[in-house]
Length: 226
Image (cartoon, rainbow, N blue to C red):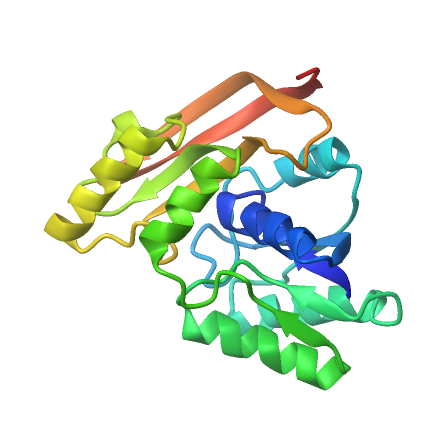
């Protein structure tokens, strides 16, 4: 199938693209919704501008739309508008959703309305298995946001590897943290993957911390040879 992928710039959407293409599908477009607030229910907020650089690294066409407000209806309306622009050029929509029934059903509804298939290669898979898959598939994902008990400032800027996965598993058992961060516990930014023709090099960043949550905001970055 010809697909458009929901793309946040994080590990799950990147892994979903890799898995879909391994199954023989073709991801022709990346669709990114720019949320109006960091409290977005459906979409990533930190460093969303970096998805344009990632799209260039992959050599993919991107459609970026902005939600008018942080309301769920406005976010879904923005997504629907984006998908509708290319509905005649694709057969389906691809998402990296794992366990969020609300996200899954909302995105499925949009696809049904537009006559498109909805592909979710990570759906209901063991979150620990998915996280291991991120590492084993060659995705270099950096933590750029944390917002959960047990996740401290020291995690910002960490690359997800087997050591970090072990830590997240321990925190999951102790604090009931979702090891994939799908509930907003943490957010990631992909710097390289087998999909990338070039890697992303961060030149300048800023860390913002308040109470028990914080973000690593990239101020300057460029593409670099692998």
